[in-house]
Length: 81
Image 1: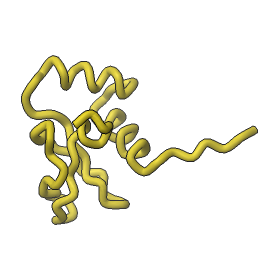
Image 2: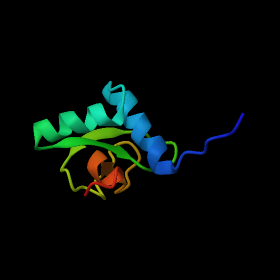
Image 3: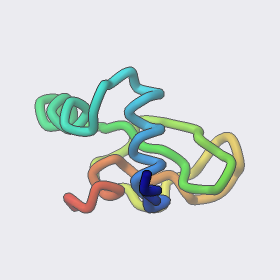
Image 4: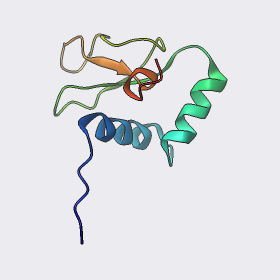
């Protein structure tokens, strides 16, 4: 049996999908594409999984949970923007 190591970004993307109630990243990205305005974002600080709705290109949004400018939109985290 081999071990698969996920990148930190992949772990955060999976967590965001789970917290937003989606089965896969594709499902989440489809909804984001259809919505067209604010999109789900997650704090990338280790140990903080605070989510918020942010602008699609957000890469340094304010985290209300830990206080850092560490909230990144799903589109940036997935490398689409």
